[in-house]
Length: 139
Image 1 (cartoon, helix red, strand yellow):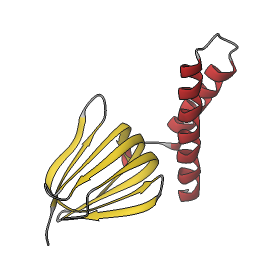
Image 2 (cartoon, one colour):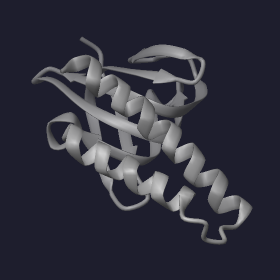
Image 3 (cartoon, helix red, strand yellow):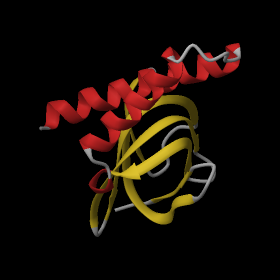
Image 4 (cartoon, helix red, strand yellow):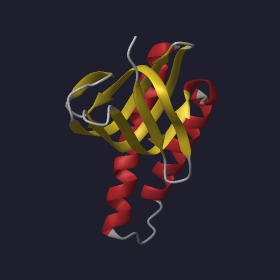
């Protein structure tokens, strides 16, 4: 089976850089998407997505938040740049609930926050709430 080069990066680290990926499935803001070798070039936005990477060895699932997807047909390459990306096995429901509580406490603290900070915290809260919904449905 043909493969493509996939890179997944966060601001802190490179999560994956493989030329042996058969398929990538994720949710963009425009809907679900599967990418295979020589997919048409495109750019998409990611708010929150379960991302599945399929190789000859099997599948690995990640949860991603807030980012951008770039697919280059000529290079046979997909690049996913996200704020957060973790393997689903390393995320617990309790950790997500705790983080959501932290975001809510920041927003409700009465502390003087800039408009940019408030906007960021609200968007982060929405993404985490979506993550909680997905995790609750899997329980």
